[in-house]
Length: 312
Image (tube, one colour):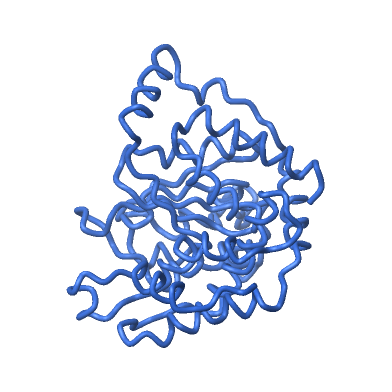
């Protein structure tokens, strides 16, 4: 990796740490998804800093930020935009929806209906929308950060499997430690740290980083290691729906991104191991008996990792 890549990573991580205290590991995974060209699902209880993190990333890269508050009455056109009749001109005119941005915050995405959630499928897979039969490309880079409340919360709709599969990683911020929460309290004594946040990168910098990540070397033994992990999850009798080829590619690409953020031009097995759960766990659906037995997708992946020999 070029020295400039490392400098860019250091600048944005330092910038975000001014606002999000004590969550360096979570920030690291989110940045991995961004430079890998994917999207992030933040799942946690309200008030843990999910929205602030999304806004801070947008400001740090000097990008266009848009927020959609997902509610039960939200319609697909409220996301993608739609055509309106202009009586003065006698024609239909297209008005862009909030997806035309660089960082899109889909806030509480599981509080809206599956019909509206599906409006993001084309957006997240192809970085484009199709309205009235016409394709419109989105600005680049385009990064979706969706927040999700735990499914047992009142008024939530479980995300469809096809929607979950579009997220490259799923991250849980969790509560800060008492020491970190004290820092949060004092950091907002006068003003919120976000108010003084400045851009440290540009959108072009992010695009350059995404291009550079793809040049990271992945030895064939590492690629086969990824495939063995995925195959083990698919073969597990407790799994009803397992990892798709999109998930395999996501693990491959995020491993490249993690190596790049570490300053390496090659992927190590530890890169794969560190990302197996954030990348694959949300793509696995267990059968009913396994769920009620206390088994989780993370359990399945841990067992697969422990059983598969590590490449040397």
